[in-house]
Image (cartoon, rainbow over the protein chains, first blue to last red):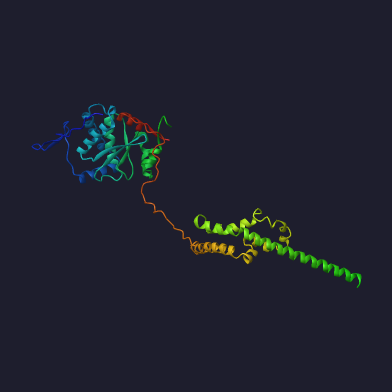
Amino acid sequence: MTDAQFDPGGFFQFDLAHGRVRTRGGARVLVLAENVLAPLIVTAVQSGDLTAIRTLGSQLGSIVAQSLPAPANSLPPQVVISYAGSVMSLYGWGSLRLEQWGGALVLVVDGLPPLDEDNLAVAALLGGIFSTLCSAEVACVPLARTTKYIVVDPRIAETVWGWSKSGDNLATIASKLSTAEAS
Amino acid sequence: MSDQQLEQLEALLAKVQKNRRQDEHREQRAGAGAAQAAIAAPAPTMSAASSRHSEPPSTSVRRPAADQRRPGNATAEKPFNPPIPREEPAAAPAARREPAAAPRREPAAPAAATAASHRGQPQRQSQAPAAPEPIVPRVIEPDPPRATNRPIAQLVSKHVTAVDATFGAMLKRSLSLRPH
């Protein structure tokens, strides 16, 4: 296991003379209050277009990938989650943890302000982060009434989402899934 | 006298003789019982004395009766044994335990035996009222089960979780999951 950790020092550069805030990579960002961002997110969810939030996730994923000492797929899960969590917390998107339920990866995001009711915005953000980070299309399906998101293939995301909406808990959902070689 | 009256007289005579013989047997048997009691008299005293040291009183009371039943101790009464039980069948069982004739002729031995039996009786009487104490069942009920929000058992996966070394392998496994 590597000792590498994400270094948050000097990540944001505040150019007060010109009124600009930039990240370490040079991208310009805006600082928003959560009670301003939340209605915007709710509007995006209602219109069914979460592209902007997924794009934000992709940008965060790029920052994580550039910070990692090696490609994410070749690193231990602890290192990847540590870096991804550090970047998310820098942007104010809560704290990130990783769980494994059987063969399923489950991401847990705590400390978020209330956004949309079904947590679809955070699901889109996480999908953008890990799709970019791992160079694979990833869907993070929110589990109802929790702060957990199960990482699945986008082709079965709708089915899993339906199970969650119908009241299945994480254990039940995990038991309904099996790897292709096992089934 | 007629022949019929003669026959009645002879029958009467025979009955009287028979009764007389039975009386003689009875007396002889009583004498043999006294002799047996005289032989057996030291035994209860000894057993009663020894019972104070080693045996419980109840066993010392039974021992004289057992000695009387032994044929070796009363060789003199052997000839009288066959006719006696038929005459007094009801008294026979009692005579085995407490010889009725012995106390009349030999009061010392029964006195010792009675004393021994009296020593045993108070214990029986004192035990008797203490024994039947009513049994009250003690009910021990378990604590009510603690309420929990989580299910007691959860099936997480039907398959053994593979330990993946890299995040890429874990992600690949998660993405390969399909509904079954």
